[in-house]
Amino acid sequence: MHFADNIDYPPLLRRPVVFLPLLAILFVALLRADAAHWAMVQPLLGGLSLGGPGANAAVALGLTALIGGNVYLILGLKLRWQVYVVWIELALLLIVFFVSFDLSWEFIRRKLWLLVSRGLVTTLYISAISIVCASVLALAGAIAKLSSNGIAMGIANFYTSFFRGIPLLMQIYIIYLGLPQLGVVIDAVPAGIVALSLCYGAYMTEIFRGGIESVPVGQWEAARALGLKPRAIMTRVILPQAMRVIIPPTGNQFIAMLKDSSLVSVIGVWELMYLARTEGQTEFRHIEMMLTASMIYWVLSGTLELIQARIERHFGQAHVR
Image 1 (cartoon, rainbow, N blue to C red):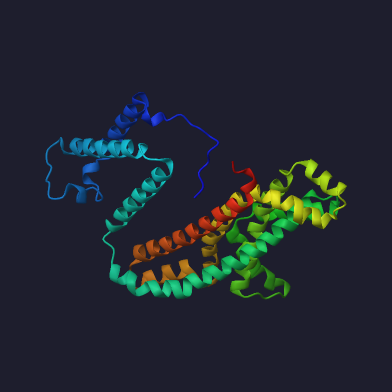
Image 2: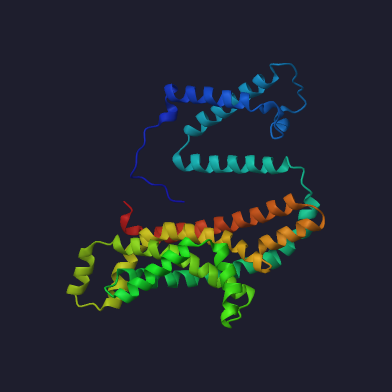
């Protein structure tokens, strides 16, 4: 995890004039939300039985004091540990929130391997192939938009306009159901890959174009002065510098694509969300399967975030002080 060291914001939460009004706002919000009856709060109350009109106020006051004290203690830690502690606490709150649903853990245990062995594998290879294809399309589209060839620019502009302007679900239907009208029959999985690649390639074209344009013109001129060929200029001079700008938004697009791959289930692909939905119907355990699939998606997204962070550090070494 990288921590920026070039921005210094004033520690506003340490100032009573800011901290105390925020606590007052939190108390009022908990009071109006009737926090005493939250399922998540019941384990904290233990066997304590609160009654009367002041019960909700007592719970709201207790939660406000607990949160305020927690924030005050966290602010005394170093930045790195503040991030870690906050992350862990929020994860624990999320777990408590899920446990309050009274889930059938035995049902989740029985279906988990099916979701991983079939749904997750299908989701991964559809996403992986789509990511590679989208990156190639994005690089080609960005170069075409920056070229002096009017035909290439026209094709690239039409491509990005069309595929960014139509919903992804519609693109899947057009490719899967429309191409057979022209005599081109394509199976469900390839149709989903093509749709994801074309859609996200259009979005990423603008990311690549912005990254390439972020490199100073002097770098192009210096490379030409050294006698480098256009291909060498792009691959050895421009792209390595542009990647620092390209990687963060591209990583977001990859994570979004991973989740949007669930849309291919509409054409019968047995990916993760499709299996979660169908298996949940067998015993009317929809919430168990939806939450399990959500956690699997979160783990995959977290893995991509870690990979993205490592790539960012690699291409940003020249800017680290």
